[in-house]
Each structure stands twice: as structure tokens, then as C-alpha cells.
Amino acid sequence: MPVGERNEAVTVVGAGLVGSLLSVFLARRGHTVEVLERRPDMRREVIDAGRSINLAISTRGLYALRQVGLEEEALRHAIPMRGRMIHPPKGALMYQPYGRDDSQHINSLSRAWLNKFLMSAAEATGKVRIRFRQRVSGADLDQGVLTVVDEATGEERREEGRVVFGTDGSGSAVRQALEKVPGFESTAETLGHGYKELTIPPGPGGAFQMEKHALHIWPRGTYMLIALPNEDGSFTCTLFLPWKGPVSFESLDSPARLEAFFEEQFPDAKALIPDLTQAFFARPTGSMVTVKCAPWNVGGKAVVLGDAAHAIVPFFGQGMNCGFEDCTVLEGLLGKGGDWETLFGELARLRKTNADAIADMAVENFVEMRDSTGNPRFLLEKAVEKV
Ligand code: FAD
Picture 1 (cartoon, rainbow, N blue to C red):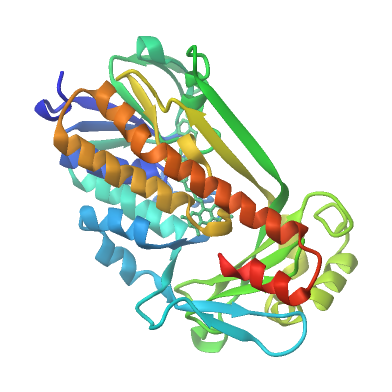
Picture 2 (spheres, helix red, strand yellow; picture 1 turned 90 degrees about the vertical axis):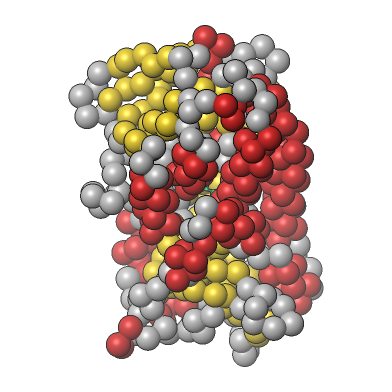
């Protein structure tokens, strides 16, 4: 049946950033959307929003929000970052503006705030129902069947008969189900680096303790620290470090080693992170993965979007932005009508090459930074030129 000619009920798996925004787009086209989300409702319970505390939203992402009237409110909560502030091991800070004037900037935004905002916007359409603590544990997508576990009761049930949109992130259960379909190919490559988040708290009276309108970078070759500002005056720092090796998460195995490392490499940041040791050893270390797959769909029955289709390591800050762009392109295709199979095939044709290219460039940038051991100036420039 043509996509644009009925108010069909569809299922979205995952109410993360992409699934929530996608639901808004689908609802505006008249579809009734049931969203299955494995976590509790983060608007009512304090839970980790997952991965980075804040992220950079740029033109791709903002354009998608603009299509559904959400850009303005999002920007009200964002902090423009107009350039990079480089913190060399010694000597003065170096500021590199992103553009010729301040209008060219990226924006730091809280992941949790954005996710909650998008979930509420989806529900406000009156056509989206998000069901929390509902984990998709498997699927027979050829038959249009999802297996769902109610995390509150442990009960398992089958859901069938609906078109499925898999926006359940890099470890996607929907993509794993696609792997059972003959001809489907997928790769997931984990980086040899992990990341740890640390916090620079606000100063007296909520003041920012470093330049507010900049993305701060401490490039050091095989590792790097970055910091993005938050609305409350704090900064979220992310330390990217190899899992193993002479300077690694493995080698920083005691408070004394950690403190000495920060004192030598990031003394100005260390002075601003009062709970460095406690936070470093208490907080989880995240991993980063590149995911590619093809095709993105099973006929007209299911499709994957966002990280489920193309997880991207964060060295370009483009993972979410690309996922939002999937939604923009899907919206254009929904406007043309046609059946789901044609639409999903066209979506992948328009998006896959670009998404995979950005994923490759993000890894290349990472590898270049990791392997360059020569001229410190070269290192510094390479490390920052694409962040
Ligand atoms: P997710 O955000 O992973 O959401 C998936 C959702 O599905 C979650 O709510 C999850 O609970 C749910 N789910 C998972 N499995 C199931 C299941 N089986 N059943 C039901 N629900 C399920 N991108 C940027 O654009 N800019 C940045 O600055 C940026 N910084 C980053 C920094 C770091 C350190 C990292 C790791 C990533 C960064 N990214 C950034 C990438 C960005 O985080 C992802 O691209 C984005 O979160 C993808 O959104 P998503 O909705 O596809 O997946």
C-alpha cells in the first residue's frame, strides 16, 4: 500500500535521539507510532542518558530540527562554540575561530536535555506512544515479528504486523535480526581507544572557568582531552586514551599515576577538576565503534537508521548529526509516496555512501592523530583541524 495514503501504525525500536526525532516526522505524516524503549523514562527517573553528557550539534542536525519546528527551542539551550581553544603542553593558549565571523559555529547541547525534549515533542503530536522498559530481544523480520521483553515483569511477547524502524543504536537488536536475512552484511569495528568523562564544575556564581564559547582541546598525539561547555557553567571533559600500552587506561591504574599524568600533560585542566581521581576510577570507560551494514532494510518490513545503520566514532562530532540527516531524507521520501520497500531502498541509496564516508573520515582522523609521532606542531594541527 502506498506510504502516503494511509495512517498506518508503525513501530520504532529505541527512543534515543534518532528514534524520538524520527517519531515526530512519522507522526506529522499521519502515522500512529509505537516506540519500544528498553530504558526507563529519563524524564521521570534519574538515569544515565548514555554515552557523552553533551554533544555538538551542527548544520545537519539543526536542519532536521528546523523541519519540525524544534530548532529554535534547542538553540535556546545550546552554547555556541565559535572556535577551538588549544591547550598546548606548555605555553599560551591558542584560539582558532571556526569561521570568518561568529555566525559560523557549532553548538554544545546536553544529550539528556535533547533526548527528553525530543521524546516530549514526539508525544505532543498525539500520535506517538513511547513504551518504556520494553526491550526488543529478537526478531524475525521476514515475517514481520518482534520479540519484546517487558523489563519490569520479565515477560516475553511477540508483536507482529507492523513496519519496523530500528533506531536502537550501535548494538542494535534490529540490525542483529537483519543479519539472519540472506545477503545481509554488517561490520562493527571497535577502536583501540576508549573514553572517560570528567567534569570541570562551575566557578563562583556559576561562572565558566574557561572560555565559554569554545571547544577546548588538549591534543597530545596518542591521546587527547577535549571539553565542551554546559548551560550550568560546567564543562564536560572527555579523555580519549588507548585501552592498553605505555600510556593507557591500563597503565593509569593508581591515583598516583593518574595525578602525575594529568600534572604533566593537562596541568591547567587538572587544577579545575577537583574530583579527578574519584571520578576517573568511579566512572565507566566507554568504547567506540564504527558500524556499517547493507542493505539497511528487509523489503518494506523493516529498516535501520541512525547508529543502528552507521555508528561513527566521535572524532568529527557527526554521529547524531548524520542520524538526524537520515530523518530529513526520509521525510523528503515520505512526501513522495510510493511503497515502503521502494522508500527504504531509496533512503539507503541516498544515505549509505555519505554516512559510511563520514564514518571512514572520522576513523582516519583518529588514526592520523594516534600514529603521528613527529613534529609536535604538525601533531597539534592534525589533532585539531577536524574536531
Ligand atoms: P542511541 O543514542 O544509542 O539511542 C538508541 C536507543 O535505543 C537508546 O535509547 C537505547 O536505550 C534504545 N535501545 C537499545 N537497544 C534496544 C532494544 N533492544 N530494545 C529497545 N530499545 C533499545 N554525535 C554528534 O553528532 N555530535 C557529537 O558531538 C557527538 N559526540 C559523541 C561523543 C561520544 C563520546 C560518543 C560515544 C558519541 C558521540 N556522538 C556524537 C555520536 C552520537 O552519540 C550518536 O550518533 C547518537 O547517539 C546516535 O543516536 P541513536 O538514536 O541512533 O542511538
